[in-house]
Image (cartoon, rainbow, N blue to C red; front, side):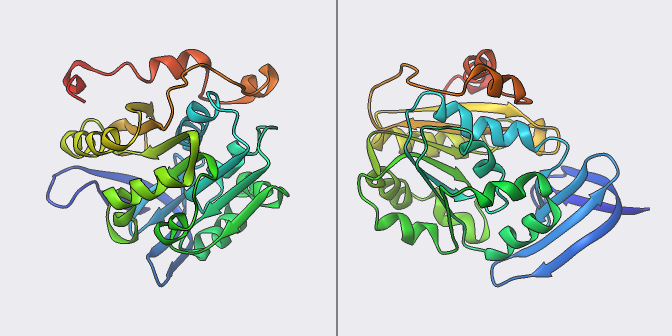
Length: 274
């Protein structure tokens, strides 16, 4: 049987191996290597440069938490998704009636093309009339926006290759400038088990710009250590819930609940200095 092997980090000694039924798609774009694999335990799986991005089995744990934690405490009308070309975050954002416009900015158009073909669960989101999908460098795009977005969701891959710029101080400052006065940002912030120093550095940088920045996490088996974290950054000081999903839509989610929302900010003792 075919095997997929991912090295979590070169030289770390940490790897994951997954049985593969079939390789459905593989190509090298101008930006990265993309593959879609039909796996034995997780259904279809998308990888970029040999790193797992999502699986049909557990992507909801990631997409719901990067989206609904900030969206539930915002009355967002305009939302920017940076990265996320697969459409998983877009699928969650358009569940909010308050949203009038959502821009998805991903540098690689092929990610969107293959996602529409191989991941039917995300396909319909791209047809929403409020969605504007653009394929360009998000670091350049966000520079041109001032006081515009209510929520920015940075669904980036790991800080290697084309995603490196999405973790730099200048980029965070440009995102800050693109947000309205009570704007909220949520961005992918790696594993608390394996990237403690990286997380501390980035959260510290964000706190120098934003009114507040907190680390929270979700449990997802196919990511290193079984969890992945995010930073929730608020430009203003409003903390109260303003709007959100109706109870029926909340019930239809697979991972996110109001209790999970609160619990995701409760960190282990070893994360106490974050």
